[in-house]
Image 1 (cartoon, rainbow, N blue to C red):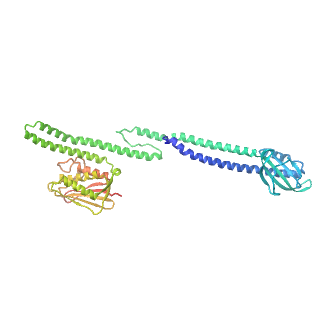
Image 2: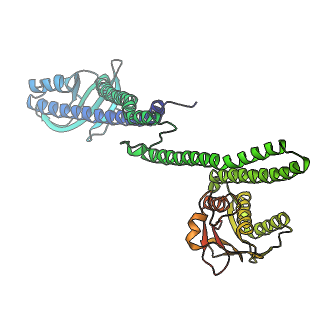
Image 3: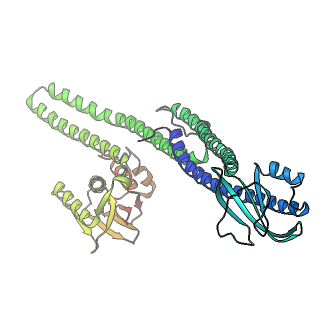
Length: 451
């Protein structure tokens, strides 16, 4: 059975162990009380026997003194019976027919249980050397008491002890049941604080909470921060995308109208070619925008799989060669002999590297003849370096080149190639760097190795 209530869960967790401890304490109390009662009442019987022995000697066997009688009647918790035998077996004083103990020791006191007039009794047989009426020897003194006296004492003590234990368990149950409600008040305040948050207001929760829930609040604040930044990023992306797509879409629409209104087939064909080019550029921009957004929203650290970079670079080289088979640019791969393993998304990595290669072709200039991809590692990170012999990127424009919708120099393209690659590598817990070089562009990708 599942308990959805925290109060019920705590009650179930706390009470059963407490009940077990209470039962153990009750059993121990019963044993201790029984032993203590036996010891107390046995000492009472011994005190009575000593007093009777003294009085019999002093009165020559006639009677016991009033103080001893009060001892027998008042201090023992119940009536005590006694019987005294002379050394020769002659009855001296007391009650007749005492409980008899066979094979009684002539010297040591002996305690035993017996039956007297159909009732259970506790008996002490005591032997004392004295002189009574001129008769010297060992006198046998027997004192006994009803066992019900001891049982009543034990029941009285145990009933009080069990009542205390029961009240303790009940008090704990009540404290747990109502105390949990008081203890949960900070969580209820936290619930109200969370309820006040809206999609447009995701400020961190700043209030005093119990130490046990501080980790929960910190995790929640971190989540709210990521969501807030994600929403801000999406809002910014939508705004930029709308701005960037407005002109291409308007251009496509204008060319389409021009084709429709062309004065002759030759003009229509020419404008159709321009329309196709504009549509391709708009499509390329749209794909780049979607790629950038996909790169921004991918959690590679959780969803990544092992990627072997040597085979990966070969696949990228094949894809690039097939796409730009007639571009006249040579792609050279410098690869290590062993495996280089990272955790990541091979599709996103391939798109990032292809974007960088596309950038080299688009912005490398007419003198571009060669692109080199080098792969290496240092035990902690893998390094993928892309170098071309084109016009390169000036150091002063590195930051601009990594910004969305901007280019280091004017020309075709969407201005998203480097930002997409940078975002993909960042999602792989790595970094993209534009390095200074004597000629061409030099881009270094750093990705942590898989462990």
